[in-house]
Amino acid sequence: MVGLGTEIVPYARRFRRDLLSLVDDPAVWLHVHLDWHSVEEWIVQPEVPIYLALQAQRVIGAIAATPPLSGAAWLRLIALRTASPSNDVAKDVFAVLWCALRLRLIALGCAELAALALHDWVSDLLSAYGFTHIEDIITLRRRGAEVPESPRPDLRIRHAQTYEASAAAAIDRAAFSPLWALDEGSVWQAARTAASFTIAEERGRAVGYQISTLHGESVHLARLAVLPEVQGSGVGGALLSELLESFIKRGVLAASVNTQASNVRSQRLYERYGFMHSGLDIPCWRIMLA
Image (cartoon, rainbow, N blue to C red):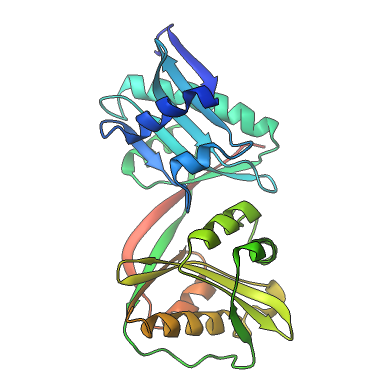
């Protein structure tokens, strides 16, 4: 059991240095899935539910999630200062942290919480506390200088600015279910750090967008979203063609993308452009809170 001296408290600015020290400690068991944010950037965002476990005023654990978006949220951070994530102390610390976070998320109107298990020990913990493995996130890769012609040469594909994150977020919310949609702040942060942010326009109307990042000699398609009413009409292919061609001109021949194993339509699109399943799969877990 967690000792009587263990206290669970919501994050406050006075704990900033202690929390950053916790996540920087190589001996800590750490799960971090913050997309385009650093931990330091993420913890200062308003309304982010974060809880800390303190023992003798020392932070020994932390847990955090996104604020719910249309009733859905993601578990973003687990940190446990313990010899093993599977020992009784770790399980007890996680249990009380999870209890505090769960109650807060329910109070915020969260109906479902999901997590990507980047480590086996995360899957073990989530499974023990009622999460269900719902599917995998798969990674597709390609390399080469050949790109199929755009299926929609009539579309205007233009570079976008960060202030257009709100328009991109509106497309995102329309294209994806609440669990998988990005809020405006996430799109803005992604656009701010992107190597490429483009919007597809049809008769002056924004109908799709993509955001990509550059990692060494490989471009990663981080987000591709198309309005539901024009999906299947070649908008995604047009965005993908322009993206790959623009980076090939810069000498970047390798590309990668993640998608849901259940998203057959997106996989078919990427396969037409030479992407192949790399075998790197990440389990996605979910728990219903209401």
